[in-house]
Image 1 (cartoon, helix red, strand yellow):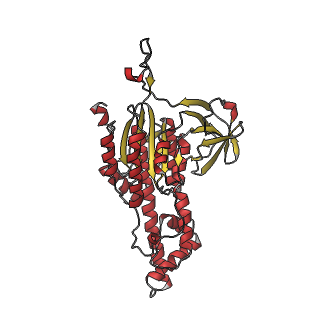
Image 2: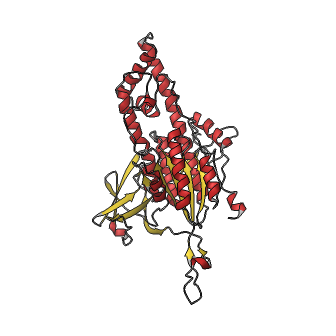
Image 3: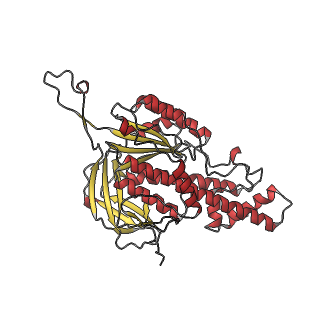
Length: 437
């Protein structure tokens, strides 16, 4: 691999990350995304705003039979798309065979050595694989399991033609693009959790982003009562008014931190996809994560735009749920200072189910795979590096869809019995940004 190509991959996210934090605190999100996103210049000293023009949404679809084999003979008329339960027409239909963009000629040893005729060139397509370890959310125990499984993968699943990189979501670790397995191994072993936006275990009341969203955005009375009860347990001497103030303050802090966390995570993934899009061969991003929440409208919009961008750039995102088989019951690490609060178990269960959604949606929306609910992370790594090579790409026109920021659920059906359809689950058309006069 030429040195100049390797040098294009490392990300120095220290300063940009700080900039994102400042913008997040202002309730804004700014970055240079795609040509479809037009950044208007602002007076000096004011933040940028993004205006997004959305005319269509791309829906990659993978269809398999009962045996798990790819179905390759479907036509446009075999597909039916439903948007919030209503039929949605297609504006375009294509088939992608994701076998690479820059073939190389195989070496003599890769051709048939037994043939008496001169060996014919054999086309071997490279894969560009970026393993993205989510150090912003992986616990120490989860990180160790993921590191061990990832290191074992290098010995068995990567071939000589593969170009790979090991990157952490925070940007603290980056091996650069390389075929050197030792370098990739060293990068994996150097990973450690960087829990930048997590609430502290000593906080009291201890409010998660999931519970804070229920309290602040959804006005869930059970979540509010739980927080107040925690505050009383922290200090039984306080009045009900003080307990309510403590609960509300804790919820606001958790909501701000959780919102920033999701924004920065998706922004960093977006930047990685942009860089991966310039690489040769089959372009793959493999996310190793316990998941994170995307529950607020602007973050859901950001997630939808990431899926659009990856689909447009032919970058497959696959995800491995590093939690393995997990329990939704409260554990010692979830102790709320000994408070006998039964509803906390309900919040934990809801949160743990929700954090996996973003991984499933990113995989389904880009034609990748999602490996979850298994402790065999090694098998997960292997499966995710074998992403589908035959993908149907449906384009949906959005000319008559209101740009109101609402979530549209998608359902794709095919005229073929006994098949399994994997497709994008939904999309959001963001509200247009009003220009100040």
